Length: 463
Ligand SMILES: O=C(O)CCC(=O)C(=O)O
Ligand SMILES: [Fe+2]
Image (cartoon, rainbow, N blue to C red; front, side, top):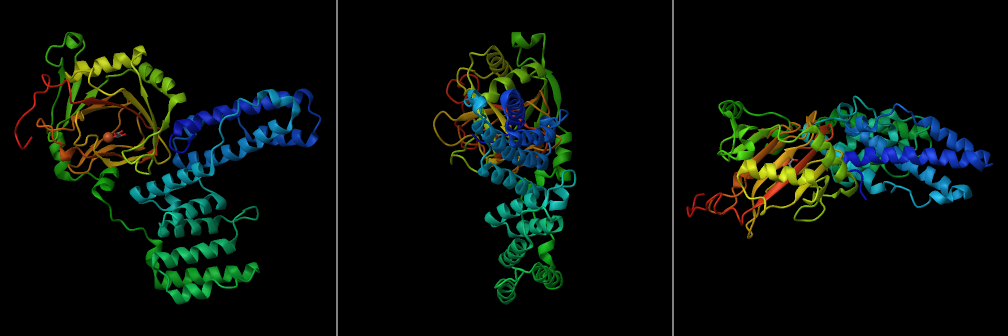
C-alpha cells in the first residue's frame, strides 16, 4: 500500500497509529514488568497529543511529509514492542502497514514538483512548517536523484543552516553533495570540483572552512545557482493562476442559467444551475449537483478501497493520486449516475463506473487527454469536485488557457470527442499540484456507443 499518493490515507494512518498505541499501553500496563519498555512507551505517549488533528495537518504538504516520516518511525517502534511483548501477541494480526522508504521519497518528490511549478525556494515552501536538517537533507537527496540539481543544492544549503548537534546529517556529507550538485548544475568548473572533494579532513573545522570557500566561490563567480529560473510552460503558468487578460475577458462574457436539460421531468422542479465556463471547447460548470452528505458517504465507501491511480503507462509520476471505481449497487452511487445522465442527456448505460480520487502530497495529474482514437472512446467527461482546495489543484486546459477552480459540490462537463468521433485536441487538461488542502474529485466518463441518438454523429471532417 502507498501513502504519499493520497493525503487522506496519511490522515487515516495517524488514526490507526493512535489506536495501536492505546492498545499497546493497555496490554503492557496489564502485566509487563519490563521497565525499559514502559519508559519507551511513556515517551511515545508523551509525543502524541490529544489535540492533534491529522486531517488538518495533511492540508499542508510539508506538514504531511513530516507526519509521514514520523508515522513511519513511530510505527516501527510500536510494532516492535508488540513483537517483543508476550502479552500483546493477540494483536499481531491487526497492524497497519508501515510507510516504506519509497513513500518518503514519493512525498519529497511531491514537494519538489510543487517548488518547480509554483517557483518556490526551500524557505518559501517551509515558511509555515520548517524542516529540520535531516528532513531537508532527504528532500535534497531526492532532488539530486531526480537530477534536479539546483533544487538539490538549495535544499542542502537549507539543511546546512539547520544543522544541530543532534542531526544525523554531517557537514562532510553536505559538503560532498553541495559540491556535486553545483558541479552537475554547471556552476562549478571541474578543477574546483576536483579540489574540493579528495581526502576530506575528518576534522570538522576543515570541512567547515571548505564549505565556506565553496559558497563564497559560487556567490562571486556563478550566483545563478542561488536563483530559480522563472520560465514556465503554459500548464505551469495556468496552475500559478496567471491567466492572461484576453482569456479572462472572454471568460467574463460567458453566460449562466437554470436548466431542465430540455424538460427532463426530474429537473423540472429542481433545475440545475448551469454556467458556461468556456466556449471552444464548450466547458460547462454545474453548481450544487451533489450534497455534502453524499460526498461524505462516497469518501467513506472509497477510503478502504483506494489504490494508486495509473495512466496508460501504468503507475507514473505523471499522476500522483489514489482512486477507486465504485459500482452502482450503492444507492448514492447510482443516484449520482442518474443525475449525471439527467443533466447531460446522455445514456448512463454506456459509461464507466464512477471513479473517486484523492490526491497525494503535491498530488497532480499532468496534461493528458481522457480519450484516445480507439473504438467506443470516452465521448465526454463529467468531473465532480468533492472538496474545495485552498491553494493549487485547479483543472487547467493548457491549449486554450482555461483554469477551473475546484468548488465543492460542483462539476464540470465537456466533450472529448468531436461529433465526427475524432479527439478534440483542445481538450487536453491537467490537475495542478495541490499546494494546500485535500483534493477529492469524482470522474464519470461517458462512452461513445449508445449515445448515437442523444448526440448525433457528423460526417464533417472538421468536427
Ligand atoms: O483532478 C483534476 O482536476 C483533473 C482530473 C483528471 O483529469 C482525470 O482524472 O482524468
Ligand atoms: Fe482527465
